[in-house]
Amino acid sequence: MNPLAGASVTPERIDQGVDYSGSGPLHAIGDGTVTYVGTSGTGWPGAFVEYRLSDGPDAGRYVYYAEGITPAGGLAVGQSIRAGQVIATIDPGSPTGIEIGWGAGIGTESYAMETEGWSSH
Image (cartoon, rainbow, N blue to C red; front, top):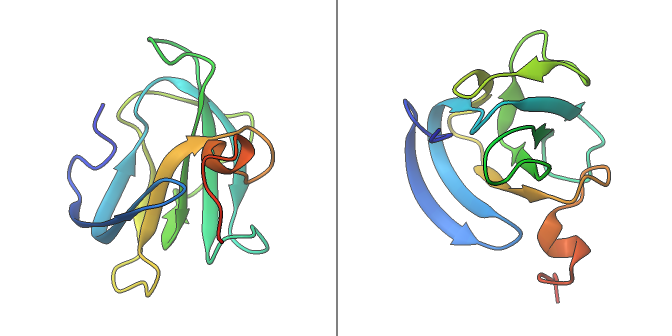
């Protein structure tokens, strides 16, 4: 499932994940379980939502949506989600935009950071 289906986005840059600006809903790319939901103190400039995929070729991998997002109402750790389910919305006009990427499953750490595939230096 395309996580940006129904959203209006402009690609920005690639760093720990892929950055976009825009507005609209963010969908789950596959069935899974929510592993993290935070709106403050996430270590990112904004909210952070992570889930672990339970089916398909990437089963067991983590996906995150971060920065200028608002988690869907009622979204909670341990909740099962379905492919295509809206799990967050893009905050229009956010100065940081949003970031989508593979999570490491360690708090709010991206897979790129965990594997030293990205550095702020």
